Amino acid sequence: MKIKIHRGQNQIGGSIIEISTEKARIFLDIGIELDEDKELEVPQIEGLFCGKKDCDAVFISHYHSDHIGLVDYLLPHIPVYMGNKAYKVMKSAYDYRDIEFNFNPILIEDGVSIQVKDITITPILCDHSAFDSYMLLIEYDNEKTLYTGDFRANGRMDFDKLLEKVPCVDNLIIEGTTLSRENSIENIKEETLEKIAVEYLNKHKGPAFIMMSAMNIDRVITAKNIAKRTNRVFMQDIYTADITTSIGMTTENTRVFMTGGDKQYEKLKKYSDIKIGKNEISKTPFIMSVRSSMKNYLLKLNELVSFENGVLFYGMWKGYLEKPQTKEFIEFMESKGVKVHILHTSGHADSNTIDKLIKDVKPKRIIPVHTENAEWFSKYKEKDGFVE
Image (cartoon, rainbow, N blue to C red; front, side, top):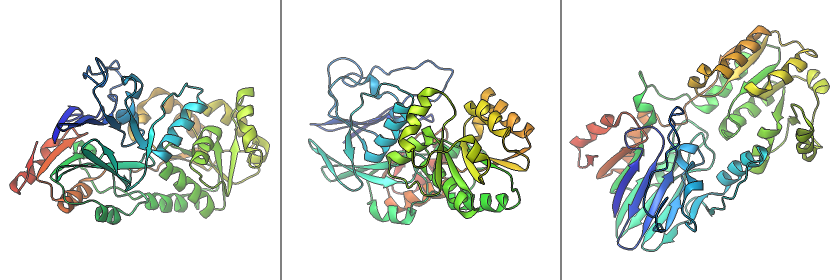
C-alpha cells in the first residue's frame, strides 16, 4: 500500500490523500485551501483532476469545504462516497441558496465495508462539528491504514465506544488542527456548553439569540435543549429548519420564521404547522437562531419586543468575530441592550484525545495532516513506530 499526501500535510485544510496498490488508486478527501486571500487552486493531479481518468474512487470524510470543496472539478465518472446524512445536510444548504447541485455520491454507512478492487474501505462514524463524519479504515494485503479525517471527543458521541471499533493499525494518518494553538487545553464538552447557557439565561430574562452554523448539528441540538430547559421556544430560520428537517430532527418545541420576501414565503409554506410571524414571536419566550444578514429583520422585531437584558450566544469560531459584517452585527445587538456570551467549543481533537487514539491503535507509522505543528508528534519516535 502506497500513501501519498498531495496536500494538507503541513497546513490546516485542503486535504488530498492518495492510497494506491498494484490494482487500485483511491483518494481520501479533496478539499480546498482555507486561505480566503488565495485564489482557488486545483492541483493538477493526473487522473483525478486532469488528463485521462485514473482513479477508482474518492472517499469524503465530511462535508466541510476543506475536505470536499474540489468535488466539482473531478474528472467525469469517478465514483464519490460520503455519508447519507452528510449528503442530505449539504444538499439542503445548496437547495436553500438555489445553487445547482449535480453531485450524486454513493452513500456509506458506519461499519459497512466497500470493496474497491483489492482495497477494502470501512467507514467508522466519528464525532466532529460536521454531522455524519467518518474515519476511514483502509485494508490491503494484511496492511491496515486508518485516516482520522477531522474528529474530537467532546461532542455527543462516546469516544470510548469509537476506540472499541478501531483496530490496531500499521499506518495512522491523523489530524492535529488544535496543536498549533497557543496554550492548547482540553476541549469543553457540548453538554457543558448547554449547562453554561442555561445558568446564564436564568439570570437574563430578555430574548435569547444564538449565532451558529446550521450545519453544526451538535450546536443546533444544544440550542434546542437550552430552549427546553429554560421554558423557551426554539426559533429556527428557514435555512436552519431545512437542514435539521432533512436529517429527521424533531420539530418539538420548534417554530420556523422567515426574514422577508415572496421567495422566502414560498419556502415557509412547507412549515405550515409550525410557522410563526414577528407578532407572535414578540409574545413568546424564545431562543432564536440568527445570522449577521438578519439585522433588518431584527430591527423590525425590536419594534415589537425590547431586547434589553437579552443574550446573544456566539457559537462559532472566534476568528469570525474579526470579519467586518460580524463585528457590525455584534455591535448592533449590543446597542439594543443584548449581552454577548461566547458559547463555543472546538470541532477538532485536543492533544489528550489525539494521544489517547494513538495509544489505542498503536501505529507503526504516524503521518500527521491538517496541522501546522507536525513536530508535536515527534515524541512518538521513541516508540516502535516513526513519524513522517
